[in-house]
Image (cartoon, rainbow, N blue to C red):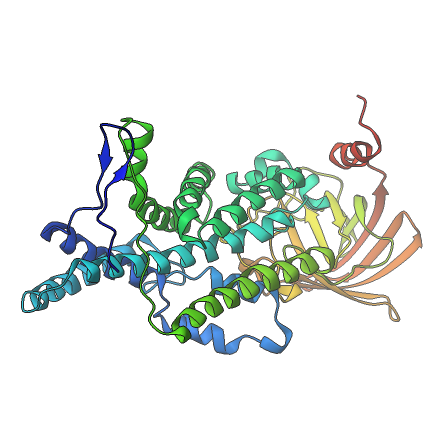
Length: 462
């Protein structure tokens, strides 16, 4: 690509010339950054391709697309850490040194380095766009931070971890969550076009700066990943940062860099447009459609198996017997239940003084299998969560503790429902003792639900 060497007239006394030739230090830096960001952006990890080939493409779930988009190179554990950055940087340094030594024997033109810089920016732009759009759609259709479950609403504030409080605080304002998702999607779409890429990178830097600090402050699990995306955005913005500084801060004349590669041959130009069209159709149109359907029919945070009809609610434990010994209500007894919550889905949570080893997972996972969804109990103490199956013919209910620290805990209980507000359970606990429990529904209203309902109908008056 040859630049037009004719000066651009800005005023009667000011002119702007085209970019100066590449210096040796700039070439060395570009070789290093090219290798580093290539390794960070292009999937070279065999685990990524194992995921690609294990995906059910005939019945594609939006979670599978998210998992592919969420890729970042991780060599020391399941998720990327700072040690992976050091490893990739070391490889890039060695590779850049070998590359620089080899280039001493051949003269590289400025056009070669212009093209090299252009293509690594293309790779980084699209990698960052994928990451932003992937998160954007699960916020636009508020899936990432759902409205708190009944069990969450009946758990003391101090029994949640910081990140779970942050997630629930976002979940109670779905319109704000959708706005955040829209910002991410707009930033990602701007990256798809060379002329708007720096604007998109600037928007993303502001947004991800808040995300990164939130992860640090609330103990979130995506701190490394958000900083990874920030590094990509910084690299993209660096292309125009000097010109922006000249124009906006120093008030000096600045001209855009209008470089674009020469694609000789019609098939190359057609391939470029075709690849961009495929990208947009897959990561924007198809993924957006799948995410919208998921929001309407299959939210990924909570199980999709329906619970017993008409049981959803919180119940007071009126009677509790173990081996025919009645245990009175107690806030300190680790055995005696204090209250029980039946969710709309097949989950029961039980509050007692029995210690809970926290499931502290705080990394975003879109588990398509309903039984693997553990968001409701993650970061929450004081309650034990059980998935259950019910045999309505024999009136038998089987509870399985959902916490990975209690995988072996299983209850087999008979149940009876004398009326719509009363449930009687009896059977065998994990210690093989007989238990008998009488539950009475508490007719409780929740301010958050009332506010949401009255907000649609004209406002809530207190």
